[in-house]
Image 1 (cartoon, rainbow, N blue to C red):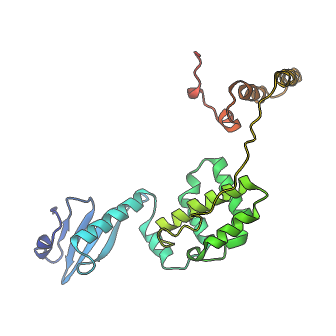
Image 2: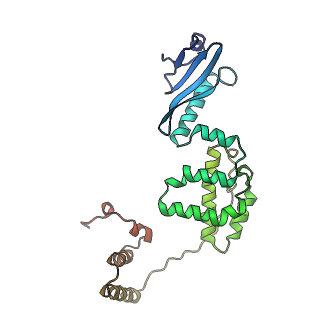
Length: 252
């Protein structure tokens, strides 16, 4: 049966009965002999699960249990399995183990080139420094040391800082770290001088001759076309190499 779950409604539940809430889908309360428990019935990764929130009584009331059900549903919608969260929380997980889960939860959904960049940065710069530490114990000093070692590679150093920031935010979401404890907070990225330079008319002319020579000797026409588009549009290399027909205004 369905009704708003209230203290009054709970008092009327008979043994072996379940009352489903009308405010939050899948949230319910059931009585087994003298025990009353709050539950959540939902699908996780395509499979139906019945999650026990807790027994009626402090701290679980209709309102606190309903809020917990909403929180669980938010996690599930974000691709987080509550049972996996609980398993991880019950262990003092290392940075390496947390990263492996981060790869499954977040990195696997990124574009191939971005995904490869994340994994390469972790392997080369992050893992050697902190992989064996508990993710809860990674400090601002640890992150600053990693960033400082890359002072001669400022772009890479800034990229590492960004990756670590996302990684630690994810860890907070799974409650692997205390809330608002991201160790990258307050660390300043390196200032990078602009490297933009425009070709002169003479350089454009010589580049055009070189491309024509490549065409004459049978070079890949797609590569030549990509370079020509870069010349004409001034866009980034990745934007041209990943360009799709639907993004091209053929009329203009």
